[in-house]
Image (cartoon, rainbow, N blue to C red; front, side, top):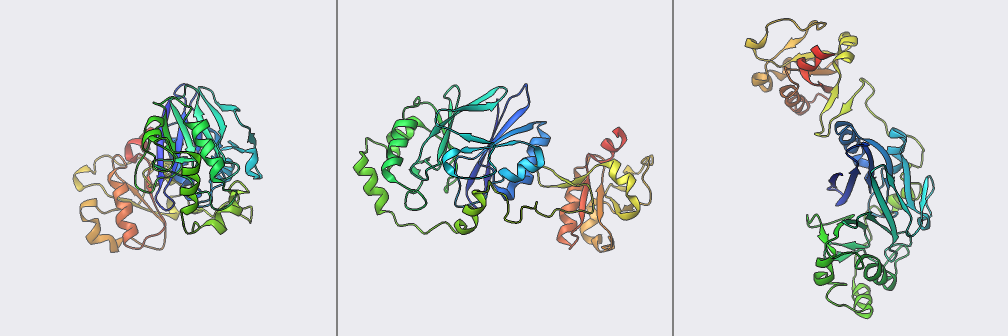
Length: 346
């Protein structure tokens, strides 16, 4: 199985990718709206097809990317039937199995943080994605939405602590940089519910907590009850000057074929060194040549009246040129994917 753990720093949210190496079909768990471009780039670079986006609950601290990813890929949206959200294709029930070819998850109802909180257990019980029900050395709060500390105690002790001790726990959030835990660890060391804590211990602990409401709750909850669809029902605006793709590394890129067809409308910046200028590049005309080694000093020579696409042998140095151009105030910039090597292949 292909597995990736991704992080959104603004909301301390983990997004998880699970995919089958053979079928190349993928599931994303708890994606973040602002990180959709990153997630799409990862899928593209790993040659995966997104089939399902599954949220563990209707989040209060960030907006899910479920609806946006469905518009981009045609995937299905999965969420607990108890969450009360619309635009959901798979209304999950307790103990329901779902997944893609080669990867199967079991939905376990784990309410208490919200009514619709669901944990996703991998078929072989080696991993569980606990959302906000059980965090690393903590748990989700139970003082707003449909929070109920007694229900949360039973969800954790009966549904999650009943899994094998070596089952790896992957939560929806961590605010201290911790990435995973295990059932055994949390049984022993969780300060709220571990170490033989009783229901009374847990409930009184949770009721004594006084936390501010999540900063984005007024924006996040209404959107998440629409599966992340904006109130306008429209996709966010994207750059329209080129057929752009953003790489998983965050680099805006265009294909050589697009550049050939649109040369008059862009400035082509060739950042190779003088000793590399041998045979001409087929189909390339009127490129501005400024080697990367002197680009910072000469960046003022790059016109700002048109978008700039950068070129080098492999596309690596020209991606660094993007950073220099942006720092100098160029907004419409893109790297030519794969450089001259890919150009010749196309």
